[in-house]
Length: 150
Image 1 (cartoon, rainbow, N blue to C red):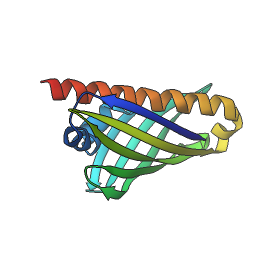
Image 2: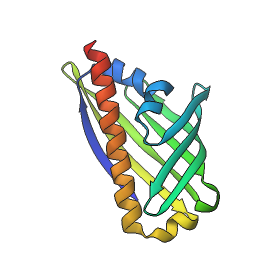
Image 3: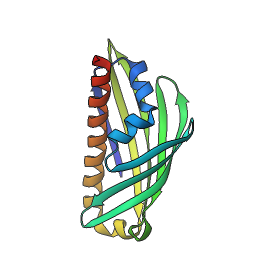
Image 4: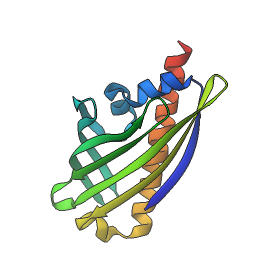
């Protein structure tokens, strides 16, 4: 599954970059995120509970930041195991472009699932993944825009 998108954020690029690296902000914005903690400057541990169609699962996983080019871009990738529900893994290349006092966040994401979740069908998985990604970026935009306005 491939997904691309763009968000215009009402905050300067350095503020957006800091938020993309703040586990507290990310935890609030990741749908179903129950915990997110920094293990190192480039590694985080996460617990995320999601529902795809009739299957609800809690995924324990790791998130890694790579290809870091502060404050312009990075790659965020993760892998989670959801017990009998299966696994999910994916990543996104995130690019921040300055536009006056605002920032344009562009992303290209890829995801894979396996196990019981994969049996639900590509259309359901794709639509749920798209909805979750859009929710994350919308919530992230709102959180950063509010913080920048204060």
